[in-house]
Image (cartoon, rainbow, N blue to C red; front, side):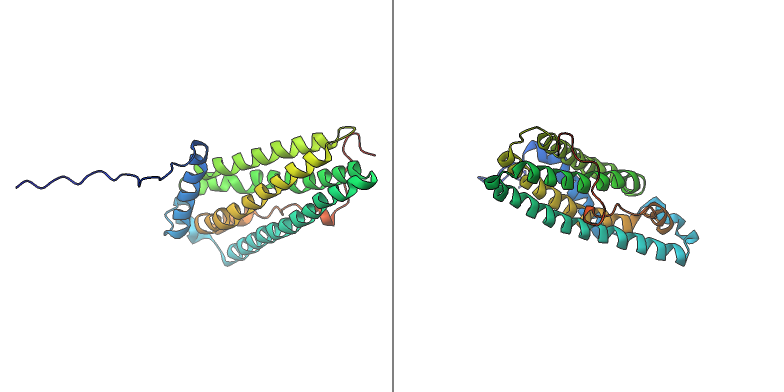
Length: 228
């Protein structure tokens, strides 16, 4: 009797397909997770013979600064969360406009220097050295674009003569969630891939440019247009 061909796998009843908009990011995360856990096959590792112990030390110091920068950003986000929480309290005594603009300035000074540094120093390494890295950086740069778009909208709202304090606080709090997820994405996928696939001397050179300092430790820049 002829054996029956195996049937094609079917989705369990009630199973849901991922939304179309999630496919690119999900694919990037799946690819990156596999690369983090597998043996390195990057062509760049073929030049490790010319890497010196000094290169390795410099790479490790650069990665440590990168991780420290992310830890500092998480503290910045906690501070921003407190500023956002203060907007509601300020509505009762007429200080809501000042509270909104303070939060918007701090948000802008957190987000834009960080994104610019990564776009310049970090993401090109993924493109050049990580197998399939272009898919990962498409997702990462897309996250940066979304964050920039939402930040710009909040800064513009804060610059209005009478900003919507309640709406600003709600949208800023939502953006905080996006920012924290973005750091999780980089801490669990991007940094381990850099360490695994990028030659030590190349990574050390790229990370020699220090990440931007926390706005909590630097003087406030030019006020937003329309602010006191």
